[in-house]
Image (tube, rainbow, N blue to C red):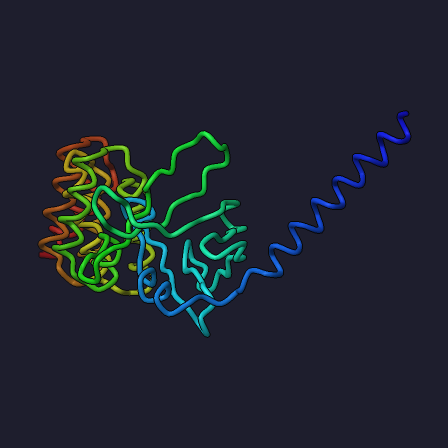
Length: 239
């Protein structure tokens, strides 16, 4: 009996595998023009990150999280498996707002579909895109909105902004660095470190007076900041 049961279970598994293989083989990897037109575009993954959906030779690809050519496996006419996410995705229209969304296929039968990833209008940009395009005021406006909605949002982490500013500073991109540090001061006006960093960028750009003013702001918030104190003393001697 045990041996017969073993062979029965093995046979079921083999049949299941064959059926899955047939389903995948029968599914056309290409997509029809209507689908391509409707769902090509940028989708809001989180407050400051997007997933770009594009097609080459009618095959769907994704740009996401630094990868420029993720190729999801098409499992049927409207479902794709993205191994980088370990998720199945679909493209649907939300009946509530009539907008297109990329959604995760529920893993359980009783789970409802959640319309998380909305397709952005062509004119919409996330703050990091504004920052990349040097639209600094728009970027600041966006980051302040994110902070107002959720002060713990990872996209507005003070240390991450500071590091981003220093990346630009090490490349001698003074304008970018200064604007990034200025955004950080707007987000965290009570942090002595953000003014210290801005002071350093301003000094390297040649604006000694503005650098001194920011070192003084840092020192006012942290009287124990020896670096700021020494820089003020050193720079004021040169004036």
